[in-house]
Amino acid sequence: MNDKQRKRLLIASILGVISIGITSLSFSYAWYASSSRVEISGVDIDIRSTRELTISSSLNEEFRSEIRFNDNSYGFFDPCSSMYKSNWMSEKKDTPEFYRYDMPFVDSSGNPRYSKANRGLFLQDLYINADDDVYVTLDKEMLHINEIVEANEKRAKEIAYLYPQFSQEEIVARLNSLKNCLRIGILDPDPESYNFYIIDPYKEGRTYLAGRQDIEKTSYYSYYVNGQQLYETVYGEVNDRSKIVYDEANKEDVDIVGEATSFNAKSMKGVHPFDLEKSVENGLIIKEEESLLVDEVDEEIMIPVYNQTPKRIVLAIYMEGWDLDCTNAHMGASFSVELGFKISREM
Image (cartoon, rainbow, N blue to C red; front, side, top):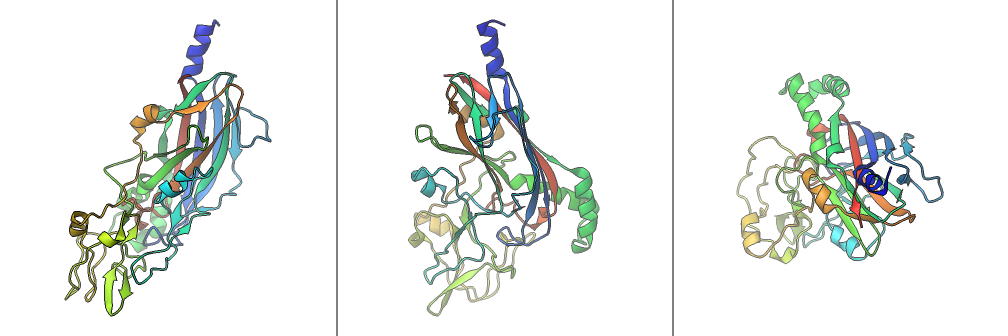
């Protein structure tokens, strides 16, 4: 094989395949509830490439063609969020940080305090080695989330009594929707190429990282107390909380339209409701998730790997809690994930 043929093969080669089996354990009403858990049952990484590409989970281990993570050491998945990622990215931290709610304390000005997610998601260091200077990216042709049909059908039968309004087929479809709120994150912690990429495999529209929530699962939007007045709490990442505008207190409960979720609840009598439109006109900016479509990864993700210099990246797999699909509808589902990396081009 001549040099030209070798380079062509190297550029087209697949760096890795990751298969993940995930099964959730229980149902809950809202994404922030501590009982919202998903079990990760295993991770397999297989290298299918020429000898120039190898991978390891540690610099102290041999670089090889496959890695197995099947010991359940990562525990359970809980929904979390990438909100406020600009904070840790500005410091160029070497591990991504995610936030969860855990019933946050809200002060008299309506400011919630969040806790960091130190569990409930998959985080794994990976080291990539090559014998040339190349750029590595995700292979969009290999990025798949697959429902485990038999497991979801079995689970649907077990929980059918909880949802008498839905048919068996509808419950299965709701379980399958878990994939819609799953995210793949890749951190390149090298200060020279520092970046954190978020891939939303089933992205439809925008995901906003703030808004009202029914955090206590009462069927009403949560509120805070300021003096003698009650105001709906605005959770999540916004630019300036002084820009939030409230209407006059409700004289009656304001019912919802559609299915009740943590994102779609009643506005309570006697509480000042959050007015989104007036707040935006007043200068409020709600942070939007910065995520990539699958078709964008080839062009947007460029991770430099240098000749015989192991490159550390951090793989994150998590459920984005602000995705409107992250509700009780999918808790109990089973699915698998496949990820592929490839070399985009030589430097």
